[in-house]
Image (cartoon, rainbow, N blue to C red):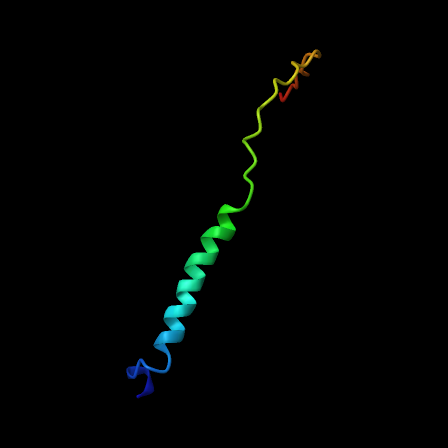
Length: 55
């Protein structure tokens, strides 16, 4: 069972995870986050809504 012998694959596994865990946070933290948009007050409607008769 070759998976029980860690010599051929463990170094590759450890180095690849070390590289991934150092590069991914740097790439994600490099993004610029825009601030939350401020809501502008909407103008009130000047027309009265229709009175719909359902009966």
